[in-house]
Image 1 (cartoon, rainbow over the protein chains, first blue to last red):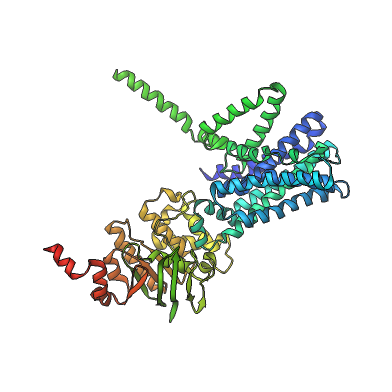
Image 2 (cartoon, one colour):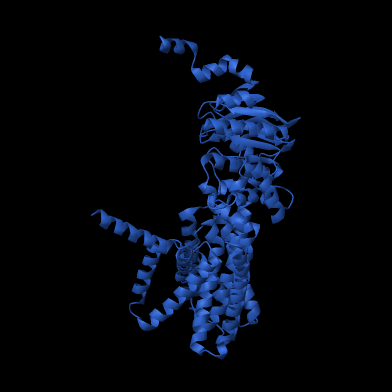
Length: 327
Length: 248
């Protein structure tokens, strides 16, 4: 790539992003209230997916704890929403997630591969059943009401969290810790032996990334007005970020963003158009994506750019012609 | 000056002693060879020194400071770097990034990205990989991956460099080049401990050799002393009677 292309790309991307952000911020004035809510959902999925990918993308530790952080945020909003202003509730929701992530990190980050994934998923179930037990035996209630907030406020708060998570992901990725996380994903032992405090880097990143999931949970809870442990700790929020990020492509920051935006929109439109078959269609699309897009949407875009897709086709055609001639 | 000292170092795996009551020292600036048959405990000894494994008993001191009990990354930052028997380069990172990581994290002083890049380039030039900096490490040949591991270790500015079978899998040309590299490292004042099976290398570069067998140290001395030691010959070639009977 030549220098001109590089520099123009350097300014093009931030420019486009700022324009997109301005469009997003001003959107409530010219789109319907329903679309604002749809955008909020999409942003929420992007926040959760990007947060997940901050840690799990480079290290390859598949965390299924997202639903736990999300649920903790939701319950924070349910409990503190009446007594504290919204800003505090959201920040505390994030911080409680961080504390939870630190505890989980210290206990589990020695686990690798499948064991880590299963433990983190167990955490979601553990918290859910603990809360159920608590509500049945201690408070004698079932679920909680959450103070509702105007949907535009929810939208703007979600935009702030969205920008914050993207900035954080970008800064981590381009710092020396981003490189360290990648090296941990490749060869943890070697990473340790060149001076990387592997345990510290892993736990700190895991905790930082959980903050955004918790705060996203805290703000989205205000839209749901009623939550119980089954709603708050819904395992779908553990699996969706994984699927969305892989679908979008893990190597790049924009992979999870694209994947989450695509899936969130797809889910919404499928639910409205095919309420009975949407899960089926959803599943088929996922299977096809995993089979044919190993590097996700980003990988596909890169292939396209390189021209290997078209040149591959040309090659194939040439081979066929050759075959014919020989016959 | 003794830069590294080990005192009755012992490591049990379950009930088996992989390294048993081994004591030795390394002087600053020398090249120490560690040899022994397969399973003698050489790599385990390296893992104990580098902090990859905790000791069962005994003590290791680096520059007079006790290092047994410290974590691998702490030991690295003190100035003790290593390579691995089976190469462990970060395959999807570029050659430059691999080495930069060493420079960014492996020292006690905080290093900026720009300085890290400059230091990484120096290390890569030293091992002769300066032309391949943008290639993903997995695309390199085995010989070059081993060079990359050395460069990555050098980027941590070590005083002691531990090389675990650097020559295994290299062709004769690459071996001669590696021998030359080692001599240049020695000239820079870096102390080297190496596990090696290629006798040509051991004989030509090592100042001193220790021999391990079944986890115990059975010899310690100059290459001449060690190769003429009857105990070492027995371990490597079997005792003389068996030798005669198989020959006859």
